[in-house]
Every structure is written in structure tokens, then in C-alpha cells.
Image 1 (cartoon, rainbow, N blue to C red):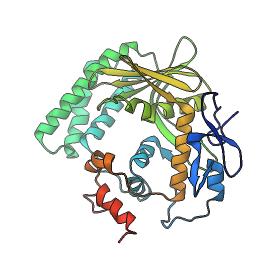
Image 2 (cartoon, rainbow, N blue to C red):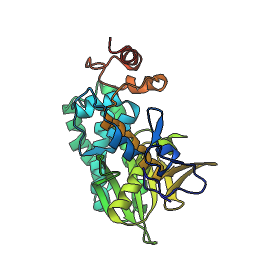
Image 3 (cartoon, rainbow, N blue to C red):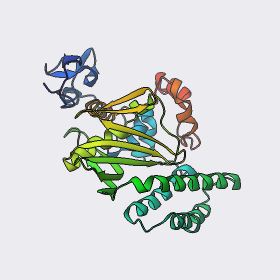
Image 4 (cartoon, one colour):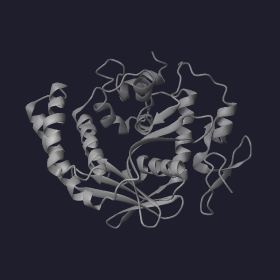
Length: 330
């Protein structure tokens, strides 16, 4: 039996419930509240007549990073994506982008040695970063140069174990519902293994995911599901390479739907059908026009601290903005 919302099989151990509009079976977590009813995505989209007060057009494809933005703060998604007010370039994003260009060349051309990589960074990328004035001080510039050199050194340790790629820096899209936008993401590297499956990897130059973040982050399940949809082939693993800290976090296939990352004695599971169900729910909320600041502001401190919209006068911050919304914008 398949779930009417996410189209994935409903396992015996999972709780099943009927959509209160059409009566078809669905995972409990795939149902959406509509008044006093719990309905499937299709009935929610079909029967919801309420028009949003905010006029907008959703993109045909929504990037994985923008999905994460909406997940944290729908108002930020509205301003950044729909109103095209992107965050100014920060040192950590630009350094990461530049290093990814070097990594891409290195996995394609193994004659592009460590010395070549370091030389290119120092003679091409670093001068461009300085010219773009992305650093606030010489100390910050030195810190990011060290971060880049550490990442290049640790990449050099990893590269010999990486086969020649099946895909490098390729942007893919996949559909989760004909009435909703497609999901878009860029895959760093895909390689083939001896068992005929595919192994995915993503280069990280920032901080590692820890604890429950490994199970709740959307990147691994989106990439695994998307590559399988695109290629029609089995994905056996997904690895995060945290090059700054020289650490890896690897999700390995358990079955067609489940992958597990083992860290010490702990295991963190991701399930593809749960991710698809969550994406359908998020996109449905976007389509409905839900772009409020989260009223539960407890976990918003870091998001607001790193956000540029308050400095631009476009948002008052989660605490004040949520109060403003709850009082009808008065």
C-alpha cells in the first residue's frame, strides 16, 4: 500500500491514517491540517480556495539551499528568493565557492597537483577576494587563508581514494508532485562502485553537522533521491567531507528507503519517503502563501544574527516581527 501524498510504500511498522477528504491512505506525517480535518497534499491543494494576500509567483525549480531557508524562516525565503534581495557575499561563502572550483578541476584532472591548487588559490582566487572587499580586516583575511590552506591539504589526503567521477558539479532537478515546483540541487561528485551502484560525496569547508542535525538535515536525502530519480540507478552511500576539520560523515544504504550514518555508538537514520513528504508539505505551504516569521522564536537567534534583512530595514527580527504578525501588522 502506497501513501497518497508521497507515493512511497507504507511499512507495517508505520502508522497509517485515511485522508479525511478523499479517504485514501497516507502516512500520518504526510497529512496536513485543514480546519479541523487532516487531509492529503492533493486534497489540500485541490480544495483550498483561500487566496494569499501577498501576490507572488513561485519559481519552477526551488534550490535545496532555498528550501532550507524556507524551513528556518518563510519570511526570509520570501524576501531573498521571491523579491530577489539576496544576502551580500560573505567570506565563508565566497571561499567555499572558490575552493569548489579548484576541487572540481582536481577530480577531473589528476595532474592538477596540490602545488598547482595552492598556487591557483593564492594567485587567482585570493587577489579576487581582496579586490571584492569581502574581508573586514587583515586578521579575517589571514584566518580565511588558513582555512583554505587546511581544506586544500585535507582534500589532498582524500583525493587518492576517490575514483574518476561519473558526475561532477552537475545541477539536477526532480519532481515531487505535478502541482508543485521541482527540487533543484548541485551534486559535487558522483562515482561508480564495483557493485554497480553510485556513491555520492559533498565537499564542506565549514563546520560539521553534529548529533540530530545529521538526521534532520535535508541535503543527503534530497541528493540521494534526486540522483536515483535522474539516473535510474541505486545509490549506495552519501559522504560529507568536512575538509576544514578533516572529518567525514557517511550515510550508507540500509534498504531502498533508509540510510544510516554511524558516529561512535550512535546511529542517525534518514528515510527518503519522509523527506519527500516534508518537501511536499513545505511547497504546499509556499503555494498557499505562508511567508510569516516563525512565532516560535526560541531557535531563531542564530538565524536572525546571521541575516542581512534586519540591517536592510526589511525585517525587525523574529521576536518583534512575530509580535507584529500576531497583532495584525499594527
